[in-house]
Structures are given as structure tokens and as C-alpha cells.
Image 1 (tube, rainbow, N blue to C red):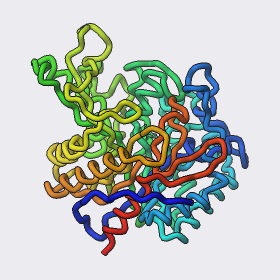
Image 2 (image 1 turned 45 degrees about the vertical axis):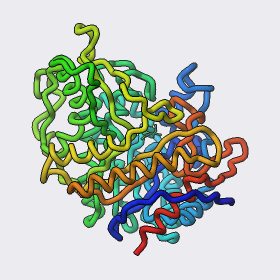
Image 3 (image 1 turned 180 degrees about the vertical axis):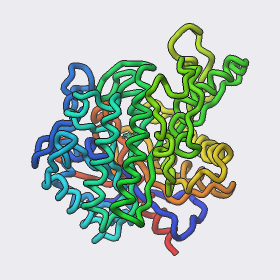
Image 4 (image 1 turned 180 degrees about the horizontal axis):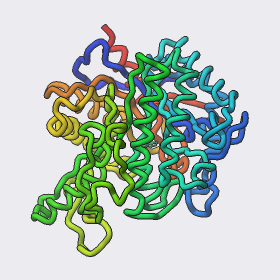
Length: 455
Ligand code: BGC
């Protein structure tokens, strides 16, 4: 293993107990798609659909982490991570989503947790990072209320097995992205293009989250429970500031951010009239008592931040969505994914959450942040990205936002969903032909940052 060094950018000091971590997700790294009794997930199905994933890539092998986790934990130890956020594959544990538990699946996470603890790294599992058991999708997936109950039962199985060693838990990853990409536009699994008819997916995921919080707390009384929401500050262009543009940004903010944060933190959904849903019960989808389940107190709010969103009034006011997405007017640097690099958007987001939710905002954890950059080891652009965003967190902290930890996305290059293996988000380069891992300059930078923050 070679480690190239990079000049560390000067950064402010964070408190000694600030948690430095890295994130991954099961389907993106594990491989072993059919091993040890694992059932198929919606991603195993979706990747086989003609044209669904760039270059026809699949997660069948991915980083082969299922077999190589020891080597990956050694990399984490070399980085000096305090914590590692990974996700648990629901169909590895419950091949058909419910009923029979597959002990070999649970054993894998057991071994991973033990290896992490031995390396002094706190395991931080996410229970759902988009790989729904296919058997549950066949019964309606997250469009069905039943899936929420199944998720609660699955959470209990995992918490009972790992809860003697795992204290910090994350229920769902980005319910907004799963709803919109997976069920709204069909560009992710399960590939359904229901547009606004996908809204029940938001409610059922959130209900499942609330049921999982209860299941985790029952099994692990001192658990810390979080959810990881993808949030994006919404910006106007200076040439688009009419009342209609303002209404469009408000509508976008409701759909992307408030639909998921309000019920968790305030106990109620925002008004969805702009989305053709003026009825607070969404036509009977939201039932009495659900709001209290969803608003179960959280120990932390996980935020995944990549970039702001620019929005204008819709060019066609009779279209389905009450906004159009727009390009920023400023020429920001772009990542390989063509996403604008806007670190101050993270400060804006955090300060905005604090202003909106006040005392209802629990401590915040950045559960994902990172960028895809061209292949290669000398990833100065990633170092700049990360340094800028860590600095943005320091800014938000100095303005009173209680941010407790930072998990960068991602430890390894991995299967980037519909983009296959083209987009490279890793601090560690993975050669997918040989599975050789090579740390990049950003790895050395993050290692040095973490070391410099130690008391
Ligand atoms: C997801 C990750 C993904 C990353 C980069 C997030 O939306 O949680 O799984 O790889 O963004 O696209």
C-alpha cells in the first residue's frame, strides 16, 4: 500500500470529541450478490434492465468488500477514523424481506463490527440504503404501508444481534432520493416512474423509520438513533426573482427538504397543495397516530450534502412540477459528475436548519459529503473539495449549529448506482479488474487532518 502525501490545508480546530468518519453502502461495495443465502434486492433486478446502468455495470462483485473487509478495515485504521458508516443489506439478513432470518448474513455484519471495534473504529450502520428485498417490491415496495412494518421488524432483528456492540444507528439513507429517483422518475431501482403518485413512498419510509427507532431503542436502551437525509439549500438566480420564482423555490424546498425534516422534527407535514395534494391525510395515506410514530425523538439528524439546487418558476405552469431546475449563473468549479462545488452552501444549509427548527433541531452529523473526480491518485481537486466543506462546517459551528461529526463519501471507489463504475468518489482508488486498493492524495490529506485534530 502506497500513500501519497498532500499538503494539508490550514483548518480550524474542532473539539476533541468531534467524530471523523467515512461512509459506504452495502450494494455499492459488498459484491457477493448471491452468496450465503442472500436474497435478491431491487438493485440486483434493476441492473439487469437494458440501459438502466451505464456500461451495463452491476454490483455483483463491486469492491468485493464481503470478502475483503479485513483489508478495508486496515485502510480505515491507517486513516485514523473514529467511526465508519456502512449499510446493512436487508436481503442478506432476511432474503425475502420478512420471516426467515439468514444467519450467515447476520454473521457477516457481526464479523465486520468486531473487526471495526478491534481497530478502535465505531461501527455506525445504516439499516436501509436503497437495496429493498425484491420480494417486498413484488408486493408494492415502499408504495405499500406493509413495507414500513416489515422494516420495523427487520430493524429489531439486526438491533438484537448487533446491539451489544453497536450504539449509533442510522435508520434510512436519503428517503427523498429513494422516492424521487426510484419511484418518481425511475432512474434508480425499482425503476418506477410514478411522478407525484410516488408520494406515499415518502410517508411509508418515514413511518418505517419511526417503527425502527422504537425497535432499536427496545433492543438497545442506550442507542443513539439518527436518520440520514439528503438536503439541498435552494437558490434563486439573480435574473429569476419574481414572485413566481420565489413560489417555485419554496415548492422545491418543500419537496426536497421539508417533506422529510418537518414530520421528523415538528411532527407534521408541510402543505403539499403545490403538488396537487391539499388534503393533510394525502387521501388516507397518512393515518391517525402516524405523525407521533415518525416524530419519535432523534439523537441526531444526519445530513448528506453535495450541492445547492437552483430553481426557477416553471416554463410550463400547467406541467406536473411547480418548478424548473436551473443552472447556477456563477461559474463554479464542477466535479466529474458535473456537480457545482459550493462549500458555502453547506454553511447556508446548516444555519438555515437551525433557523427553521430552533430547539427542535437535534445535534447534526454530516453523514455524507464528497465528490467524484477523474481517475488517478493525485486528486488535489478532492482535497480542495473536502477542505472547503470541512471549513464550511467550522463556519456553521461558529454560528451556533451543533455539528458533532463528519463522514466523507466515500472510503472507496464504488458502484455509483445508475452511473456504474465511472464516477469515482473514493479516498482510495479501486482497480475493479484486480481489486487492488491504492490510497489517493485525499487519503493522506484526511489522515493528516484527523491526526492534527487529536488532542
Ligand atoms: C448516496 C450515495 C451516492 C452519493 C453520490 C448519495 O446520494 O447516498 O449512495 O453514492 O450520493 O451520488
